Amino acid sequence: MRLPQSIIQSFSVRTVHFLTIGMAILLLGMVPVGAAANSQLVCTPTKLRFGAIVVGQTETLPVTLTNNGQTSVTISNVTVGNSAFTTSSLSLPLVLLAGQSVDLSVSFTPTAMGWMGGAIKFSSNASNATLQLEVGGTGQSSEPVTASPTSVSFGQVAIGTSSTVPVVLTNARSYKVTLSALQIMGGGFSMSGPTFPLTLGAGQSITLNAAFAPQSAGKTGGSLFVSGPQLAIPLTGTGTTPGQLTANLSSLAFGSVQVGNSMSLSETLTNIGGSSLTISAATASGAGFSLSGLSLPLTLTADQSTSFTVLFDPTVSGGSSGSVSITSNGSNPSLSIPLTGTGVTLGTLTANPTSPAFGSVLVGNSTGLSETLTNTGGWSVTISQASSSAAAFSISGLNLPVTLSANQSVTFTATFAPTGAGAASGNLSVASNASNPTLTIALSGTGTAAGTLAVSPTSLSFGSVTVGSNASLNGSLTASGASVTVASASLNNNEFALSGISLPATIPAGQSAPFTVTFTPQTSGATSASLSFSSNASNSPAVQTMTGTGTAATQHTVGLTWDASSGAVGYNIYRGTVSGGPYTMINTSLDSTTAYTDSTVVSGQTYYYVATAVNSESEESGYSNQATAVIPNP
Picture 1: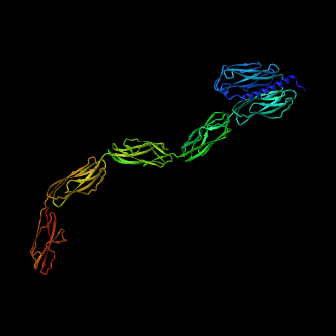
Picture 2: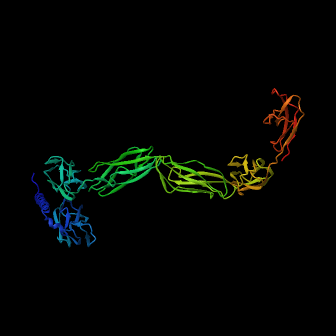
Picture 3: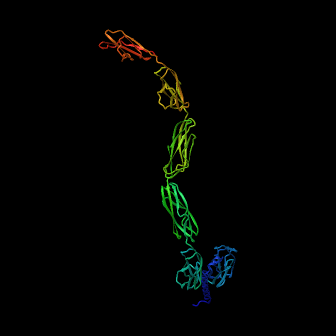
């Protein structure tokens, strides 16, 4: 069957356009490197071919204008050379910064059958002051072959990957159509599917697979051409560098965290690639680690970031390690973030003693007790403050702040200094970062008023005491108001001596302690002394005075006489201090007389005397009757 002449002419024109597009692509690849330094306006695609469009219908294709220079470009005017073509409106003048782009659309509405061509001119202050976009299409009475979709946009595709879009060609006529050839133009585009030539029956369809596998970054345009009848399907796509996931923190170290508490750290993930990537899974491994804040799956566009939280919640003491594993379809599909942390038990502060008792302390005096604080936990404890709630109690020797490691102690002194009589209590509050942040130590003591010490009698009079003999008088010490501790006693005359009391001695309030003072004069004459008792009484010392007189001893004698005994040549005299004996002979030799004088008697003593007779044979008789002599004093 011979084709009509109009169709042959159309096919011939199309063939020329194929060559023109190919040349345009080659010319673009040969642009000098230095031209990019100028502000040049480029159009993607460089030519638009609408294919066969039914008269009166409209087909619209996208176009992108880009300033690929290093300075801004101002587009001042847009003119269309053929009324069958129109552009979407631009707000002119339009300024494009270096590297900036603007999208617009071009529509083709054929008013008659046959090929229609023209040019759209963009006037600017770029180095190519007039940028010309060639447009063309064919008006036809009815669609011979239709494409779905009429144009293919692959969007962003990562370099090293590919994207495929099915294109369905349908014979819209009521008779069969033979498609003789298939041609694809543009870098990175390819086609797969049935082998050409092929025949489509009326209403029959076939599917072609258009693919885009960019080799470099940037927007690319092309076309899919089908011959016999002619059909042009515009192709666009943008090559991007693959998505790559990075973590703001390459590892997360939680340090020491108290068991039972938790610590969280923020982590940020960023897609540093040129194409989107999708995070499909995120898990945390290791005892005590977990994560939150990621709703998956999550897609990150180029340079987009997302943050999430990693939590460390230790349940036991000791070091723990793990990782956060991020799975995505980026160039690094598995991203691992190491995790470390140490669980520690919180220190606990204890006191020894737990409640010091100071007992009774005299008002005006003070008593100190040693107090020890110990950290019994596993984490260091810092004591920041220690204070007493009562003025009578104070502390010293604790330099704050002080840090105690596990099982370490610090010792200081707690002092009770009562200002008044009566029971006193208070609390020592110790503030720290321990598990018991406020440790309370109960303090107690009793303030006592000083007792008084009385000596009774206040004066001792020994009277006259023979020199060489002694006399003793008793006294007592009595405590009043409070117990009194008698520390020592002193006498200022050695003729007097204290006995009967052991010092130091504590005398309870209301009780007495006896003592004895002995006077032993060494010479004749009156003498005096004072006895001082030193104590903690308010009236210390307590003093007792004493007087006494030493008198010379009076020499007494006892005269004894007896009747002569027949046959006696002499007599012996015996003396005792107890009536009835025993007796002791007091003469040194046999007495031949019947009289004897005893001059060795002592004043105030009673003596008992007997005598015996001795004959010439030295035989001694029995005792005579007993005679009694009472010696005066003195």
